[in-house]
Image (cartoon, rainbow, N blue to C red; front, side, top):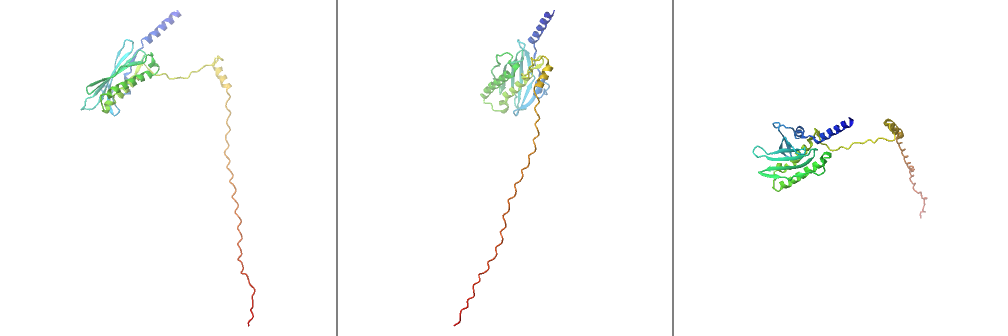
Length: 258
């Protein structure tokens, strides 16, 4: 009976992984752009000195159990000007990894389409870390920017369109869910290695604690003794005042009178 139960449990776990549901959290995606405040279907936000509008994403299932995502983004140019448009397309596999991305711009009646940017061949790489998704986004923006510059477009809001697409791409990646859980990179955690020499965890902890003696307390440092100032130098003796010399008295000489 027990082996049969284990077989059924293993089969159910495998089936849950095989039919994992991949979806986009529209509320989280809209909140990251400021909220679906325009008729509940679009978010408006400024970026790089221009105004843009992102509509709710449209999704459809893929044969491998993933989803295909399409997002419309407008460059709002004003009341008397025609808005520019862009489409961001992403394919997410059944494990929640972005396998490809492509974008198209419609500016001044011209259509500028990027190449299809494919992910790495390593399966599940985007689940373990976001490096694969970052590389796809970087290649997509670089490819689209190079094609946009060939058209000699100088308007600030149009030149910044690839950066706006990258902004939406990053927000979409953060909104990917697999069975309702967000795809996050691995976070290293501390690993506790038990002491196999002592089967009792409490005893092992006690032994480890007793084997390390506490560090001796450091005596307080006495305050420094102020240095004794050197004695003042003795003043030189005051010389006695010299007595005035008395004039020399010569003997009185009397000359005879002739």
